Length: 325
Ligand code: FUB
Image (cartoon, rainbow, N blue to C red; front, side, top):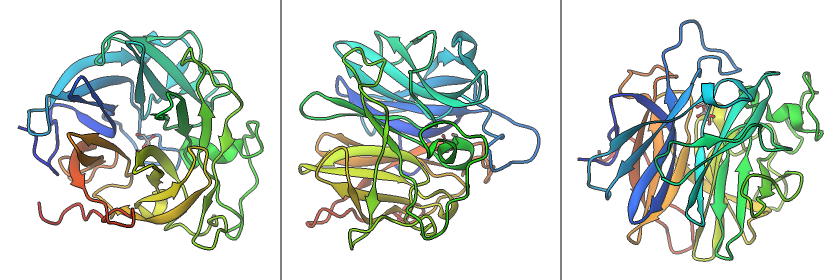
């Protein structure tokens, strides 16, 4: 049986869980961590993933099932390595899997693969989404039926290399007092395989309406965006990377700007922290990962979930991942 705050599967290492509810079941789209020899580096060389396995649970108390390989990078013509954190969207009976990977030039791009089943197998497009870059796609369907893709990650995720709008191998350093970079944002076309326009960078502001600064590592965007809507408000949540928090900002439009509101979760065991938020039967759940079952090996992670709670003012009660287990 699935238990909150315990590893959902232990037969494989899984990370970066994007959770969705389809036909009243919970589906989790994670990365599949593989063994890696050698030291970790700032480019994330240790995250040498090659395929995806989709997990599912009939409800929050049911066992979590590994549905087997749904897509392997050998079947994606444009990919060279590192098939990282995915997400999925359902439209007109088809499931679209969005995933980042390095292309043959070593540049991170976003790909899409399609299936008629939520657990695959998925068939990848010949090439990456035109105009896509960096990592960690999260696709959000708004109430009006529009789909938006949020993505981006610093360091190994190459977000800095795209700050001028085109790829620069050696970008200038951003000063501590300059506005931090935000995630990219693009609306998807009806085909779900292309962007309506060139992705734009999202602004995240502080309580005074000023952009969060690059040196504000407790609050600035690092990677792993997620979008959800609660009581008509848009919540952009993300990882602060170097300080290992999950935090969130809210806004009145899916395009932002967003205002920083607080901390969603305190650090977990392991360097990375990455999440999704989903509503199931009127309750809200945070899916996340840590490195508990590998004893803290950064690239051997396991996905977990826990219920989250909102305050009356729309803020979210901070999760302390190892309290009240
Ligand atoms: O899993 C590889 C990378 O680690 C993801 O893309 C990041 O969000 C971090 O979790």
